Image 1 (cartoon, helix red, strand yellow):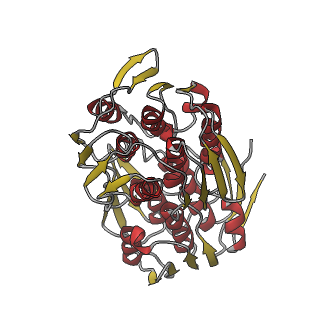
Image 2: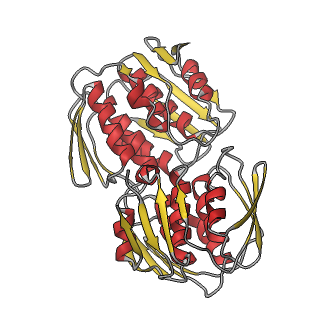
Amino acid sequence: MSKLIIRGGRPIKGKLAVHGAKNAVLPILAASILCDDGVSVIHNCPNLRDVTITIEILRYLGARVTRAGDTITIDARRRIEGHIPPYLMQQLRSSIVFMGAIAARSRKAKISMPGGCELGPRPIDLHIKALRDLGCDIKEKRDYLYVNSRHLKSTTLTLTFPSVGATENIMLAACLAEGITIAKNVAQEPEIIDLANFLNAMGANIRGAGTNCIEIEGVKHLHAADYTIMPDRIAAITYLCCAAATKGSIELTHIVPEHLETALSLLAQCGCRVEVRNNTVLLEAPETLSAPPEIVTAPYPGFPTDAQSLFLALLTLAEGTSTIRETIFESRFRPAAELAKMGASIALCQNCATVTGVAGLQGAPVAATDLRGGAALVIAALAAEGTTEIENICYIDRGYDRLAENLSLLGADIKRI
């Protein structure tokens, strides 16, 4: 089992191009099976464990998939199967978006319940209800979902919560349903816009992506597309926090600054000098970070839950006390116990964490509990005195392309063994 060994105390400094977005590439790869005419080519695909598993699912379904560097080519012209077995579905949560894609393409599906990081209950009832509204007959039997979508139809529906995955499933299924579907209270994340742009490049007719109401006019067929994945906003925030925690400076390129607005605002509150230039962000850390009074996670354009663990680690070194309130997932504070082993002062109460900054952290043996929690431990380890060993880095591999190599290029003393 691989682990990271980090000797802290070295500032992160330099320039880095941010890789493609994990949370955009996965639904876009799922959407590629909707194409029955031509071969789709997807660029800027990060080399991640989740991407590898998604490719395995595509191949199991019958698509021909090749990868060369950061470009993935998908030929889904052959018959697409409607079955995804548990050993594939349970390796990542976002596999649930295949339900909408298969419903639209094959009109029949048998898929097991999805897996992914253990962040507390993440019910898929919103997905099921939305697809039922679109005419799918869905039955649940022994950990499997049986989907019959022979009578797929347009509709008007309203989500009770702006779920990203449910919004993606609606778009995937409705783009091949006859008529116009209007979906309200949907997710507004940039990754939703990226999926809509890809589907439109394939010939779909989707309007309003990025707002809370999306209109999808169904078409009869979708064709191949050549598309480039958006940059990963959470990876960008991670590297910014690495520089901030280590009193360093960083220039990130290949990013979309407006995707980072809430995080950049918080980093500025912490005392960092932040400058935005076109598709570049420059950050210079202060000698001592200042603690913002409160952080509250919320659906986009609010502060992203995926960045909460990153700031949890950063604020352990800030002067003062911060309160972080998590409103999306129940178990996002699992890294707190590992950070405490390094000397962090974090008090938990239900969905809130009170973080009191300490003078410094100490290296210790720790273990990643989930993807972003693992990244939080990396941030802390880079700033800590002494050596930190991080186990369970398979979680980190789910969302970061060449993290250790990139940090090493930026001055970190980090190695993977």
